Image (cartoon, rainbow, N blue to C red; front, side, top):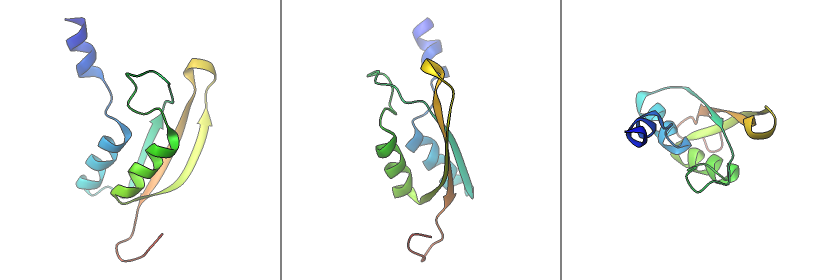
Length: 88
């Protein structure tokens, strides 16, 4: 029962969340990236995470490191890449 509840509460990976925001037509996408070496964590490598989001059609416009210890995270902000404009 607890496992089912935790599964429902699990946050989508960064590329899943970015894909949903892109499909909705959002112009800005923001995500709190919690780096963790845990095998259960789908987002453990920030460079790979940023690349996967940019492949969807987003451009990283800001990042801010926050928190300490186990509570640390990076706030990532992306802007929708303008169609037809490389590296926009």
